[in-house]
Length: 549
Image (cartoon, rainbow, N blue to C red; front, side, top):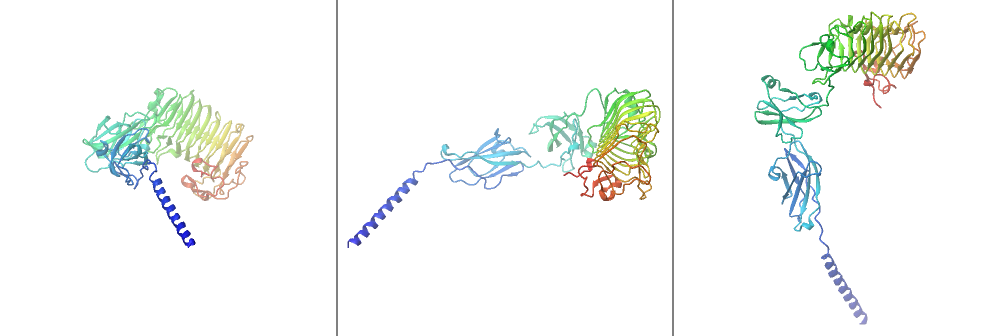
């Protein structure tokens, strides 16, 4: 009996203890402190439709309203702020009082509000989104459509006729204050093209097209930095007729920079230099170099002492079907004079009898430089021919350039100080059986500081009859000239003719593949590497053709 009683007593105590614990737990739960609402999150990603933004938040039953904020600078400043009592919101004019901008990146954040502001959520950044581009038939400008002070505006025919173009400041986001307005001519409407001028260099603009007063589209334009300007600049851009340089250069000052327009042809006109002049390519709407037609060669004035003549980003040639290959040059000098430096940088030089020839008088060309150029189809007077022993060229530098199809290469009847060839691709030069280097005057046939050939690839000679005999002669004269050849290759079909001079150390590294196996299209002056296993593919030849590591 006592045992049964004790069991009942123990069970009762356990039940009472459990009930008390249950009550205590419920009382503890009811005493938890109230906290902020969780930060809102998206139920779906932000979405742009036209120039509106759709915000679909995850529903929060404790949230009574939401504040939606919009920024364009990651909330350094807030552009728009409004409250809503729904978790699905379209941000448009009805919410913020004006339209969002088209094709603009916005940031959006949201705050959830409780019945007591103390428990509002912290702001939640929902992300960034770009509104759509305004539907337009206006073309987006490329690099070549925008110059420093001019720009090309173009469109396609669609809907109402485009009749006007307006220019706005880059920060005039709502296109309210035009800086320039153009009513299009019938010719411009037909061409669907307008060239606008009078812009400031390095400046952002918005350019818009209209059909009457109806906006049809706009694009951002960023003008380029100012091209060279000043009292020593002669800008020959924007002239519709062909300019003969011999008509305009006599009146310019020593040291003048002559700006030529890309895609335009200028006549050399036989001008003889008596002053320093630099020719450069100005900005242009076309992807083409300015052309100097060398149908009449340049020369020097008798007894002139010219500091320099330089060409940068210019094409020097003669018209197709003309007499260039048979009898035209860039310089054909027959006067007694001196020239400190003659240089070509980033030029194309082709279809000439020779680039530079000294054929009369006496004088000195101190420095002759070809850098980052492409040279091809040069006849019997080569890259340079000092053709009188009363003339001298002191220093010759050929660098980062390509030479192909040259009957002769370098020729002189007088001593020189140095010849340096670095980073060049040379193919079909010279003609088979001819000398690569020809210093041909007895007693005046040396290069005092030697000839250096580095990082260069030399292909086989030029067989002008199209036959397979390519062997060349290394040099003429140069009895006391030193050679320095480093990291320079020849193709497997390069070779010296029997009994002819061989350049010491060329090639400095072996390669057995032919020109056609090394390059993709060498006979059309395309020297991309076909043989990607070639050991000098990243370190030799003209850098424009190299394959990076």
